[in-house]
Image: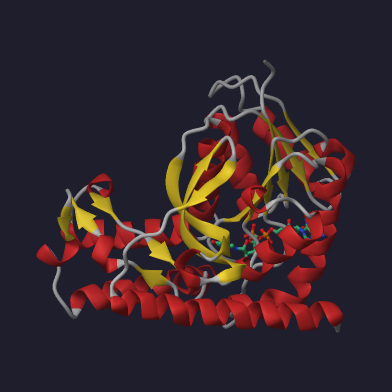
Amino acid sequence: MGRKKIALIGAGNIGGTLAHLALIRGLGDVVLFDVVEGMPQGKALDLMEGGPIEPFDASVTGTNSYEDIAGADVCIVTAGLARKPGMSRDDLLATNAKIMTQVSEGIRTHAPDSMVIIISNPLDAMVTLAKRVTGFPKNRVVGMAGVLDSARYRSFLALELNVSVESVQAMVLGGHGDDMVPVRSGCTVAGAPITDFIAEPRLAEIEARVRGAGGEVVALLKTGSAYYSPATAAIRMAESYLHDKKEILPAAAYLEGEYGFSGFYLGVPVQIGAGGVEKVIELKLTETESEALQVSASHVQELVEALDSVIEG
Ligand code: TXD
């Protein structure tokens, strides 16, 4: 029973953080892949040298060759450009589509049995492309956004109420864009509805901040986008897969009729275990939430149509 193998495709801000988290949480051996010569190798060496202190014995290596991801159990993909101030996630489409095609071919060839977690933006289009190019079944290709967006919702509510984040449960569904859907009807503090604690218009202000949270960090950083929280979110998903936790998490999953949608990826609650995305959980949404999910889904479908024209272009 050797250690699991986690391949990180993209060794930038999120990729490096993913590697560190995977090692200190004992998820398995880590391979950092990137196209930049030396950078993944340098980050791997730096991470390895922290092993005796933490401690961890798992191996961590860096590479510019896809051969080295062979046999990976999980591939987490952050390859691509990140946003700069003033850019939307959709602005990354053309460039990152080319990169995602290359990456997906590499995974298909060298890690054909892996579970693939896509992080690169625009997320909903990139995970769609990854499924198409790898040809993997829908249970083995999933997008990370909902865990991050839901954590942002929970963080802002916990801050507002000055309570532990562990006492706040919330989910954000839909596309990973400005029309994402905080599910207020399912949001609780110690099991009680959030509306018992925060009234309008403050609750709507907090939910607007959730939708704009990525852009808020980009505007402050000026040189890139969030990376600690996205990495933490993806590791939570990988852990549920590798440890067969069957945790129910919001994630971009391929829908075939659930929530009334078919043939594209959308952020919905899914059960993640050894079978990957084992099932989609259909929550009862309010009419307002269902309408908002429809709007978000329409944007995702437009994005996928734009992806198709970029690819055909
Ligand atoms: O919730 C979410 N899904 C989002 C995703 C949250 C935050 C950031 N989001 C997106 O993740 C962001 O918009 C980017 O598209 C990705 C990665 O963000 P990160 O901050 O890690 O970007 P970096 O630091 O620029 O790292 C990207 C790496 C960089 O080292 C490049 O050299 C590498 O990708 N890269 C490649 N790797 C492999 N193969 C190819 N072709 C390639 N091209 C670039």
